[in-house]
Length: 31
Image (tube, rainbow, N blue to C red; front, side, top):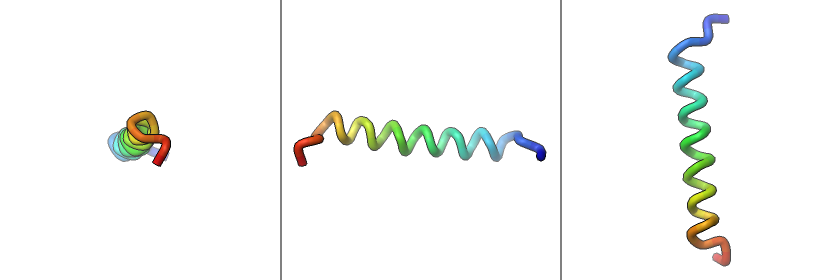
């Protein structure tokens, strides 16, 4: 189990998507 750049990339991607979704909801959750 060599968790290195791959793990970081996966985490960064996951956080990026989650953050984008959060901002999207905050921007227009009524939609």
